[in-house]
Length: 172
Image (cartoon, rainbow, N blue to C red):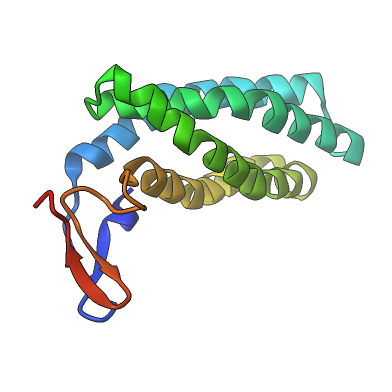
């Protein structure tokens, strides 16, 4: 989450890095209390149901993961994150409706090939490490996606660069 908080200013050079510890804490709490236990149980179940590294087993695990688990777990994560942010529930579902389709497609673009590689080629003892490395990229995207403003991708209360000029948001 902290990676997405780096703000390019002054022609693209990095001049500020203010960590929003509450936001980072929300991601950490969700990772600890929701993502880690659920994904651990899910991947354990996949390995028991579809053991081995044959292409057939790998395709089954990846298919079940991405076609059944991801469309349920991704909105669960996003709803929990938005609720922890203190968003009113009447804002959560419309934002989820706007953000989920794009996030799910991006999820498939990243995780389908990543899981095929993981399940097929990465030794079992390194699969969690590999998933965590891919997860770092994924969480950076999710942090950006869930913080994306309603007006074209700007974040409330932040300065952003648009066409190489600094634009201060009206919320400041």
